[in-house]
Image (tube, rainbow, N blue to C red):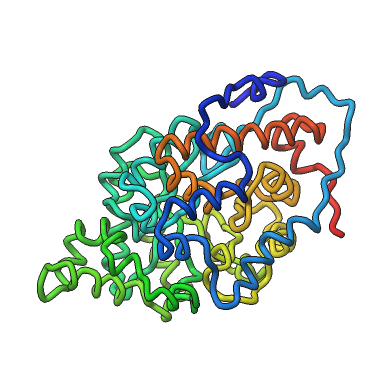
Length: 378
C-alpha cells in the first residue's frame, strides 16, 4: 500500500530538473534532441492522424466533479492486479525500438520505473533481450507479444519471459499489419531496418533456426516477415492460454463484443487502446471507448487503459470512468530522449505529483473512492 501524507508530493524538490514540466514543452525538447526521422516515428500517428488528435481532444470533453470536505490528509494510490499489489495505478506502456531515443533504451526505463514500483512492459521489438531486461532491475515487468507467423517463436518468447521473472503477457491484437503511417513513408524511415528492435529475435534459437543465414539483414527481414500476421484470431489466444500460467491481457480492445469474447475466452485482463493513434486512423478515441467496455465486462476481469494520457488529471478521469490501471506511453519516451534514465525518473516524479494533487483536490483518498467519483461528459 502507498500512503502519502498530505502535501508530501509538493515538498519533493524538483530543483535541477532538466525536463520541462508541461507535456507540450517536453515534446518540443524531445524534438530538438532526436533526429527528425526518429522524432516523427515516435510522435506521429497513422494516416491524417485523426485518431491521434481524437485521443487528446476527447479528454477535454470529460469533466471532474469534485466532492469536497472529505479528509484527504492521507492518500492511498495502491492497486491490486493479478494477485499482486502495486504502489500506483500506472504501468509503462510497451514501446519498441527505445534505443533510438537513448542508448540504454529499455534498461534506462525499467530502472527508472523500478524506483516507483511501476511495471514496465517490454516490447517484442525491444532493443535488448528478455533476459537482459529482466536482469536490469528488480522492478516488476510484463512482456508484450506481437504474434508471429510461426507460432513457436511466440511460445518461445513467452517461455523466456516466464523464466526471466516477468509477471504478465500482453498480447497486442491491433497490429496484425502495420498501420499506414504517412510520415514514416515521407522520411523513408524504419527503426527496425536500422537494427533498433531485434534484441529478442537475435537471441531466440527458434527464430534463428528459420533463417538461411544469421546476418543483420536476414534478421531484420525475418522480423518483418514474422510480425506481419493478419491470420491472428481467437484460437491463437486459446492456444496461448495452454502454454503459459502467466496472466494474459489483450491490448487493443475497442469494441464491446471483443471485450465479452475475451472474458469468455478466459483471458485475465483487457487494455482499451487504439495504439496511440498509430494503427487504424479514424477510430474511436480510447477514452470514449472505455465506459462501454467497463460496463459490459462488469468487473469480471481488470480493464486497463492506454492512449492519450498526458497529465495526472487525464489519469484521474480514466480511473473515474472505471479503468483499473493506466498505461503511459509517449511522455516517458520523450523524457528518455531528453535526459535518459534520469529524465524518465524526473518525469514519473512530476507525473505522480500531478496525479496526487488531482486526487486531493477532487476529494478522494484512494482508488476505490476515485472510481466512484462523479464525472460528466460535455
